[in-house]
Length: 108
Image 1 (cartoon, one colour):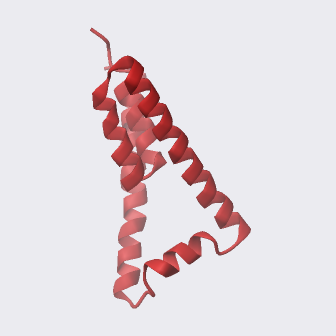
Image 2 (cartoon, rainbow, N blue to C red):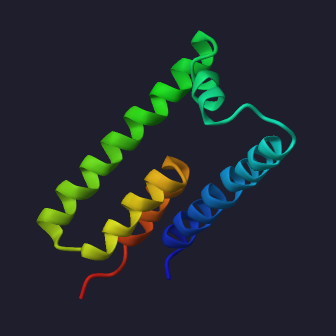
């Protein structure tokens, strides 16, 4: 496996573990009396800085999914579709490097 593919795989793993660690803390917040999912959505739009980051990630995820679908239609690399649920369930930090890892595998 090439160094580039190993780096993509490492980033995909880090992009899975680090956000899920924060999600675990979020679940603990619920156990301690957090207000629920509505307060999470409110937090995404708490101030202009956080709103900008949330919109940036939403637009990036949409662009990544569109790119994956377009390339799968041309390249017929259906395994790469795994990056779509990874993007939606974990985030762009996992979906993008995972897709690049799957896209750069040797052909043939």
